[in-house]
Image 1 (cartoon, rainbow, N blue to C red):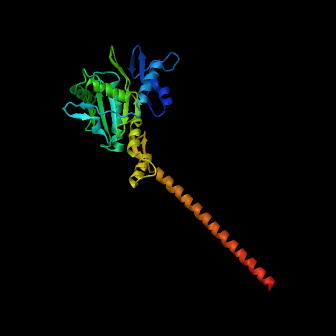
Image 2 (cartoon, rainbow, N blue to C red):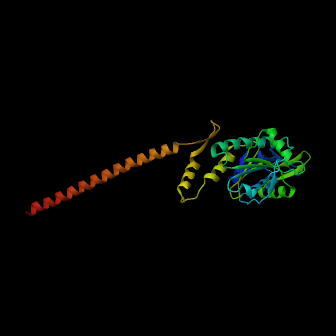
Length: 299
């Protein structure tokens, strides 16, 4: 039995339950994009193992690996620090899951750029088949799909760097008779170079990539150190995805609710204050009457 779905990493139980969307186990290899069950509709032990490897990478600091593009430019992980970085590994000769995975990522990148700004985050797609994924072939792969921009590079590297990067990201791949079987995975890294979020499957909602980016960019600790921190937190909660528009928008509804709530509380407060003042005035008048009555009787 096979499924095609997508999953996110916030809760391990959710990951395990929806893992059928990610990969399959057949013999020694893991197939990208589909999964075989254990005959009872559950996950195989190998599938659980691979997902555990991927999830264990969350919180890992990614080492400073070096890459190259088809223009001969050198890049390293340290070049991207200070902003969130989205990373996915593919092989350029892949004709099955890699193209739809990259196209789904392109949709998320477009929506993320629109919501967060063109310069707010970077993306790199790295070829892990070092015998074929030359800078020229990676550029041809990107061109064939019509993706990539100044902040999204398609890069090549050496075998040792691929091994190190895949270990740091928890990315699992194996050579097979059809080329490679691999985990369909996109990794979001924070501005400090630490793995923040894993996104799985070749068909995933763009929010699974954009929401972690938004949290990294707008997230702040409390108490707020500055007005800018407060503004970031407002943007975090008020920038929402509208599925009908297919993009993010700033939701002013929260301010309307706050205004309505504040108006209500002000009205209630005003009423209570007036009542307290009235009760105080009546009590004071009663005490004066009692004193006057006592004075009249004594006279």
